[in-house]
Image 1: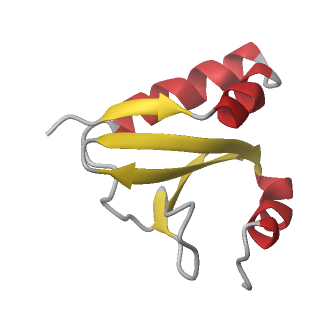
Image 2 (image 1 turned 90 degrees about the vertical axis):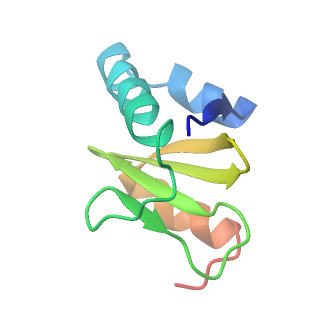
Length: 97
């Protein structure tokens, strides 16, 4: 099954602030990893987030983290953040860890 990928306006803003090379890497990885099986958890790339309703998942792309939800046949990319600001973002979302 192929999933369509939709970007939240905040994720689009996050991508616009990135260097072109990093943005291209993130977009290519999102397309490759999330269009086929976005809920397939792995040790290094995709992690299911516990204790949160949203975002449901995190994809690691180098020093960036892509946070997204999955619903039926659609992946909703919520944020694309640098690794060093992820803890603040998750605290904002209500994550205790």
